[in-house]
Length: 183
Image (cartoon, rainbow, N blue to C red; front, top):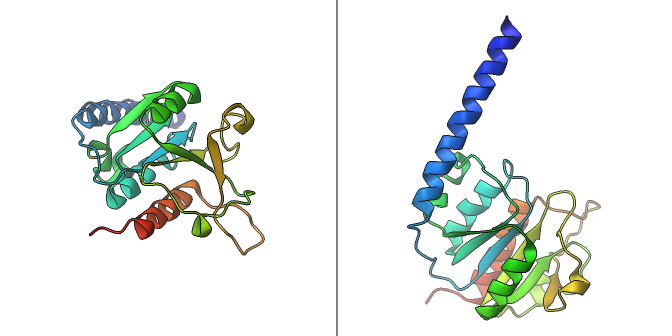
């Protein structure tokens, strides 16, 4: 009896979360681009983990928009309202996102831990797109298939050579603002 009640409760929670997501996604259609020219690309991230936290940081740092590739519904609550404020562009695959951003004049950077090109020593262009891959598998595409995507790393001194993706996103957004301060 208790297991049945627990399952029913979980199903009801999922339905309510999906309703919240759909409501916020409709509101997102009215979101205005952020005042900065950079965008963040979330490449097949786990929907329920870091996506809303990255929306929150993107809103705080003034990101123009977020591009979500292969990401399904997520609970917008951890975004603290930012999902309604930062425009989201949804893509099924990297190719469509890549073409759209190149057409808009963006220079693309894939954040990866083993890059020679390091964030603090890289002069970022004003129109920069930062690509963050799946928490475990990384980016979904072969960089050799997309030669215009540059590799960019965040220096790390510890033995663990990876950061939580929402932390990495915040670091790269902060560095962009450091290079392009608000006047």
